Image (cartoon, rainbow, N blue to C red):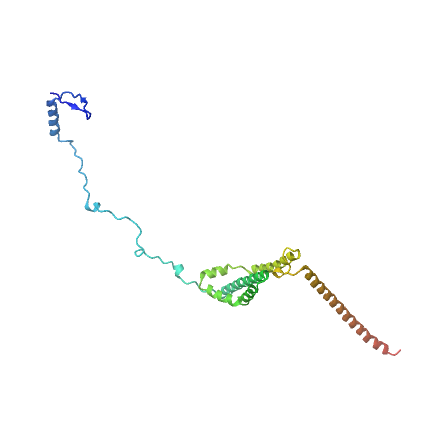
Length: 234
């Protein structure tokens, strides 16, 4: 009797007759086969050490790391020479005086006495402040670096020029009614003309007075020379 095979949905599947002797003979051959002459090496069994999870490599804790010491940073700076200290004090004084000049300019422009007073105070104490700051630079490299690169006297001179130029510019603006005369330390054009005319008259009067004194001196000397000449016998 042929075996009956059906699909899942019940449709029949044709299957050829099975040769039982052929199946048994193939089974016997498989059972009697010893396999290939060269056997493959057995699979390596994992060791207990391999089974354990290896720790990940990472940075060591800071407490275990070797601390490196920067000798240059730890070593105290060498004491400066007197010449270097004097140069630093001069640079600091120029900087303080420049700041005082800026305050004076601010007081003149804003007409605020507080800025003007601050400028006078800073300029009056520029010398002792500069000496004290030079002493600090001997132990603070950052302060020393700043003083060694501080602006020279040229900057102070330019600040003085800027102060005078700002006053001239403000007065010119007041003369042309760009700002109200009297604001920011300016005066009216009429007042400027009056003051200059008075000054010119005073100079002219001084010149005339000097000329009169010179004429009197010459007249007196001529009289002194004429008297002995007249006294001589004929």
